[in-house]
Image (cartoon, rainbow, N blue to C red):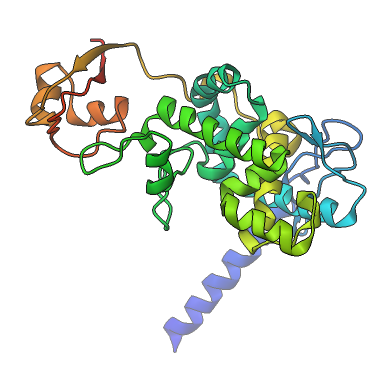
Length: 312
């Protein structure tokens, strides 16, 4: 009994001291970058209650020069939802902003070469947060190609090689894929939605619902949100400080250190031995060449592979 009383007494004393200390903490004020757009900050007032800010999105939004009809309340609320969701999903958003400094300089010139809008890079952000991710359905890479689609657009995918994880080649494939859908549907909003749900399904939906634009359609839950997530990613990544993301240039991920390229046109019995021979670890081999899947390379057809090797 005496021990229990002592325990309660110590607990009450600690709680009182904590309350006393918190009363001296300064109130955190929400900071504004301008008169209408508060930054995303979680503030703690003197009474210990956390407050979370919303955002003013009463402005025009564009994707690939196509204007979103923000005067439509449904469109407004759907975009507002995705901006709030992504802005407060801190880990993924910070990582995407950090990775963009490394990934966008690779994607942008390929989009330009194909005559495609620069905004399409935000589709890759929405797909993977710019990481070589694997989805539950088996889609892989920064552009999240399924195996069949990736192979159709020229990517080698087998037990030894998976070019869905080759950023340059996967971006080339994504450009062809998106251009095909834009030619078919006539708008980038519909092309992006087709990228998510498949062109044949979108075509059938347009016919059944007699719609002309994306905003006319009632789609599956994922695709209903998909295009608006792309716009939200674009908005936040173009205006990170407006949404509370203060990331210094030196904190962003830079390109990999300089490397040389070795052309391999025959079999490799052991990638680990290959790495050791060229003065790098197996891990470094995979970091510089994430499309290498197996531990060896059969290469019976003597195809040429460009292997990046970090310079010592």
